[in-house]
Image (tube, rainbow, N blue to C red):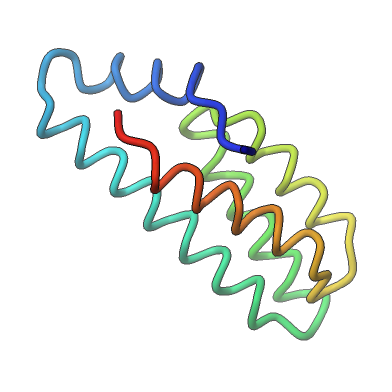
Length: 102
């Protein structure tokens, strides 16, 4: 399991307070953003597109204090476009996150 709920869930809780609907919206926005950048990474065939998607993924991760995802985004930025190991790890993170309920 790559997703670690500690600081990420704390960020959601701090932003949402006692509002479970807002908590769900924040989780959904995060998941959608990760999925979008993962899709862009999967389709990237050149360095520029790959690096842009990796940087955007890191920005999403940083915005939500998702440190394991930031590390994966750094790994992507250091890798060649289409690197299957990196894509698989980010996809596992996404799958773990979306299968975990707050």
